[in-house]
Amino acid sequence: MRNETGRRSAGKPNREGGPSRKPEWSKGGRPSAQRPAHSATAEDVRAGDGIVVTVKRIGINGEGVGYYKRKAVFIEGALPGEVVKAKVAKVEPGYLQADLVEIEKKSPDRQVPPCAVYDSCGGCQLQHMTYEAQLRAKEELVRESFQRYAGIDRLPLRPILGMDDPWAYRNKAQLQAGRGESGLVAGLYSLGTRQLVDISGCAVHDPRLNEAVEKTKRILEELDIPVYEEKKRQGIVKTIAVRVSRRTGKLQLTLVTAGDRFPDSRRFVQAARRELPQVGSISHNIHKGGSPLVFGEKTIHLWGEDKLEETLGELRFSLSPRAFFQLNPQQTVKLYGAVQEAAALSGSELVVDAYCGTGTIGLWLAAGAREVRGIELLPEAVLDARDNARTSGIDNARFYEGRAEELLPEWVRQGVRPDVVVVDPPRTGCGRELLDAVLAARPTRLVYVSCNPATLAKDAKVLLAGGYRLEWAQPVDMFPQTSHVECLILMVRNEM
Image (cartoon, rainbow, N blue to C red; front, top):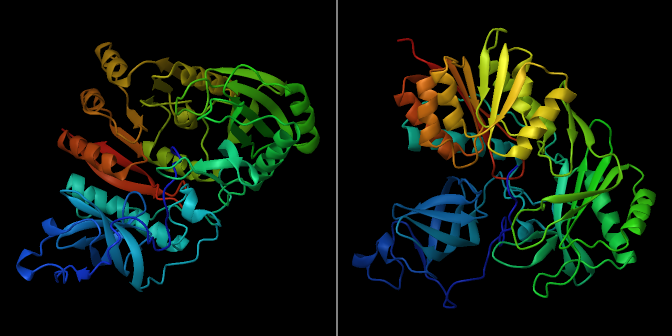
């Protein structure tokens, strides 16, 4: 999953914001009573105006999307098929943002969010929607992206791979620590505020994480270890980070502090071992300054095992506190299974994983390939990938530090051409330089894994123009209850 940010509200009408005057409700085809009919166009809409909108679909951030006088309107908390009254909050040249005020026609897919802090937390965006409807909406997001950005009206889309139980799936929690009215709080900030919302009982976290966070909070209170207050630049603990191994059930507990000092660390370790018998590793990470990153560069091991042992399918991993690992292993296995199908390896292929990270996809494919070469820009991730290969006993995978758009052409100049290229880029997509390098390398198959349907479709358009055809697309629901949708596509080079 990607960076978790808060938001103002979702799933219920928002009656705040905008001018205090009472809005006059205007439908898309009818002007507001405050305006003469001849001037009623989308360009005349102002913040505070009341409009009536029929919601057509879900947007990339989970908001309802409709149209007012042919102008897109984004309404947080609205669902497809609903007719809603909304107050315009923001007017932009290409779209409107509006706050949901009243639902005139309710969707049968609307449900009461089970989470008590859903409206204020922001970690999830779709709890007010049934899970079946969430899956349909995510499929539609992929279709709409390819239609808009790649000009593909009939996308060969496979049914989305969802979860039987779309709750309690996350194996890691990284919660900001702070002070609230009732004491120590661990959670996320609401969007646009410094209001920390406690989510230590989060419904999408593995329950063992919630228990560990609650007991850690209690220990910090009992030992009088202060949390860090950014305004005062005082205190110690910034973040409570806990990861659980689905293989062993052990916990990896890390406290991120604002400075080098961690007073009472010995007493904290003793208390944590007593209150959390399943804890196998306790560390202290130092993060000075105001960087938005969770972890700092230096980690001090306080007690237990240096790393947490975990598996993914047949692969074995040893995870340090800062090491990346998929947050939803159950769905990751489904995703990587689809990658394996798309690669269609026979044992003789050279596979290049152009954004290999810690090597999970490349290692997943290694058993069916002659050789795997992974490329990654971050030195730490390359070291983790090499460690993961050793831990899993894989000797035909090599991992290289550098930029794929530079290393791939260099290998081609040396006469080394990949049979299969796999890319799993950040949300911004591959970038034209890497796409050109892939087109020059001319692999038979390209497997593109993406967390952003829009950039996936844009990059696919370039590849289609470069001599590849799109065989199929497979969406996977990696993060139920959120608006995120993962999708992979298989592209095959046309015979010349």
